[in-house]
Length: 137
Image (cartoon, rainbow, N blue to C red):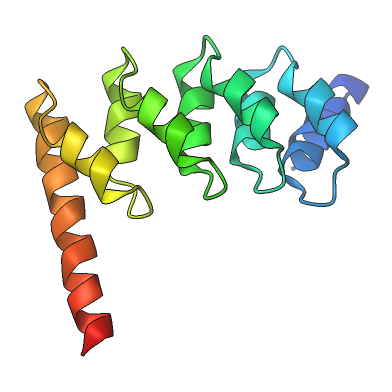
């Protein structure tokens, strides 16, 4: 793949910086405000993104960015709980299939009005439970 324009190079640079755990917080903040939802999602997925930036990204207008927040293992449980009430079913589904979500959040989603989300949350709960049983043995 050949990158032809300086605009394409800049877009790729931002994308890689947004996902790099060594990127300083001030740069992550700038990238969290980037017009590109792909860049903002990478910031949301970055384990080193400060919690206050994750709160901002959890309120992003783009559902893919909010899903990125749900995929980040460093996202505080309270923020996942907030996103479990998101209007977008894809965001709720992303949490329902997240094996790192707390059982409290998964139980909440198991009662979701969307049957696909409820079913996925139940399956994730069962997977967590069987994993707990295996580790205890």
